[in-house]
Amino acid sequence: AVTERDDDENEEDTMVRSTSKYVAASLALALALAMAAGASAQDYEEYDYEVLPEVPQEFADSMKEYAEEDTGACDPIPRSLWNTTVRDGKDQDCEGWWQSIAGDARSVADDIGQSFADGAPLLMQSGNVSTCVTPLDFNYNFSLNVKSACWPAGTETEPEGNHVARVTLELPLQCYDENQAVPLEDIPEQTILVQGDVALCGDDAGEDQRSYRQVADNQ
Image (tube, rainbow, N blue to C red; front, side, top):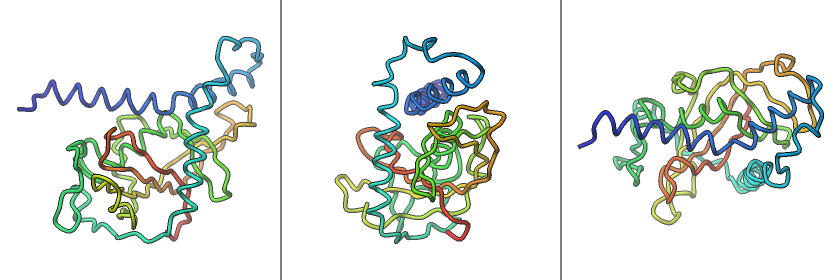
């Protein structure tokens, strides 16, 4: 039987995994802000710059490739099913990790929103990738910000039925380019529609984020 302690440990593990996913992006933001405040690059020579940018750059490149291959076809998930992971009467969560698309704990919506609480790469409509941070707390219920959800076409044929859920959230974000070096308070906050594609199954449940994209208001 699952105990309250098990739930607490699982939630703590989720937080650690999500935070480590974007640690490089967060450190890059910290460096940019520190240098804007007067610190020199020499003060940070202990960091390995050939290693730190690797994870966000790989994710940025994969998001661009994913966007190019996306047909745009997506089967809408009725709002009545947002609190589940059911499609055509069948649970799509083969790992038993998720509780909902946009509902209770371990939702796809929270997985996306919590990434931006740490600072995550976002593929902008311009085609460039920015690092964006939300002022919303890690423990915020990001399901409240969901605008739509659907099942992208094509992913159901992947090995082990690796279905992907696409969730669009409206988030307050502060976004910066890697060439920017300004204090965080000087970066304007924008309300951006973020479309996140997250796999529900696979070898690393909860970590297979395919894409975070800015989308137009009519999508």
